[in-house]
Amino acid sequence: MIHWQDAGGHPASFGISGGTHILTTPAFGVPASRLSTSANHFYSDNGRRGRYGVAYLRALCAHAGVGFAETSPDEDIDAIDATLKFGRASAEVQVKCTGTFKVGTGAATLPLEPAWVTKWASAYHPIFVVLVKVPTIIPDWIESTPVSTNHRAVAFAKRFDRTLHTTSMKFTHADQLTAETLYDWRDEVYDFYESFAGSTT
Image 1 (cartoon, one colour):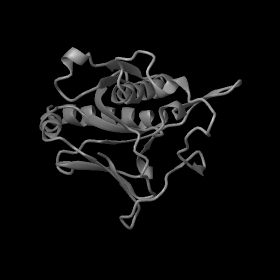
Image 2: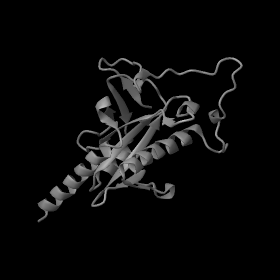
Image 3: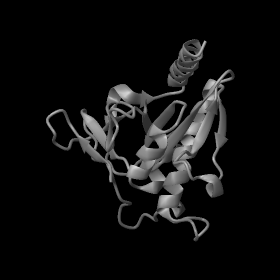
Image 4: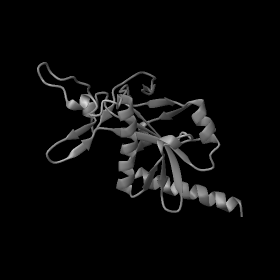
């Protein structure tokens, strides 16, 4: 469960692309999109959200020219979904995707499982946590037109801090993740390893 609040602690609407996202259902007599159900009936809606969140981050990495290595499901024992390869150094990432649209202008709180915190806190390298938000209605995730394909999603992210993020992480609009953010992550990761190397010489 991801909790969204405005600056006063009250639920509010969430704007995407300059407007408020309004959840709608098909009008009477209008057939629902086939995307309402999985083409593969073994795929759950939660499974689709999980895959979409990782794919969304992969797309941002491709846009910025960052290597992306997804963790094999059988090897997902460290609460890490992917490794981002910046060239001289890498960072690990956990991705969460939600369709809960109780978003405000304040903050979103992501509860952290104790096992995640234990694993991330013991890591020697930077770990980032990404929260991808999609519309509640699955067919609304991607808008296809004759001239473009638009992802109706937004992502937020921040670096895990073992001293601050003991039970939860809070995201605001200042934490929005774009392809350009990955350049900042690269510089931050390089600085981290360079400072670490300097302290051992």
